[in-house]
Image (tube, rainbow, N blue to C red; front, side):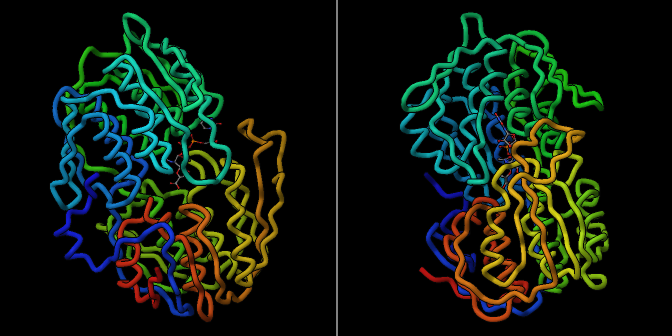
Length: 457
Ligand code: EPU
């Protein structure tokens, strides 16, 4: 597989390639200050790349971040016969004209820790009549089942066979047909699955209880550029009228609001001052409200948002939720900053059942965080996921000190890096390759912000 960064680009970059087992030795206690640029969202770019499979002509995707999840999707597309050319400066050209079926082992070998192969199902069923999915990875933040995906695919008429090596799907004679689907929960991935399948299915699909994250709306924009007919109502209902053919697209990815929120929290935790170029207000409204309540200050500018502490940090009570709620991906870096707030904060995680485990390492660094494994469930709460909930109670302020910690998942890993930067003394953060799944040029950006660290291994 060719890396997204060409050899010449890599030679020009100061950023060394990170193997998963590499570690950072971080000397903390100094604020992060300066500017970082955020590019396209991981959670749109990877899906838009899959959408290119549906086109009968080339697609061009712009502002694609240099992250390992993009490389995984690129190599999965390549094993399926899609030609992917990196034109430099975040531009990928994708040509699906040679698309072919791939073997389960090949898919497995290239999928790595990613859950993306599941989203290839709809496009491959239309193109080739069959699709394979190996065991899926992704961050270890919960069970992360794929039942909503498989049920949705069955509704379109796909036949699902579980094999020892994975799952084989086949389309019925005459192809997939539009369906009426109600998701048990507004899952981001399952909504994308339905969109990527329904656009070429015969007839109309009505999807109820859909996810409406900005990245989903951007995927709808990509599909519309390709020729799809998709409309939505404000009550989480999406209608898709299937069409006979789709063309390629030319699209600039929506910015990565998760990366933007991560740097915002880094400014809060280290008492720094960071201008996040490319961040936009509209997609971050909910985050900005909590940021302000926690004592953060922000200036919305034409080309980005400046983040810093406005006053003393204050405790907050936050519940993660699907959009337009407070994203689960934001809580991990926020918790690092909340360890420095005077008082008790509560972060109630309702999306994943194991996304607070990372707090154990923060306690090792001096934080006082207690995780209540069953959350603070209320029978009136909006979605039937109460058995999965957890709540972290964070008592602050607690000075942080250096420690030796191992990255557990993408956002948890980033959080350890900022905790180490906020802490007095030296920390070792191991297994930093995971952070590269979703943070572009993280070491270059940390250097530009004045972080003091060495790379080990
Ligand atoms: N779920 C099921 N069955 C399914 C699908 C999902 O029970 O078939 C459950 C999940 O286990 C989870 C909840 O539904 O408890 C929400 O999952 P969702 O499908 O919404 O998440 P996802 O599509 O797997 C994406 C992002 C995540 C982000 C979530 C929530 C990508 C590649 N991943 O995951 O991003 O946290 O939506 O917004 O788009 C990350 O960037 O670090 C990350 C984990």
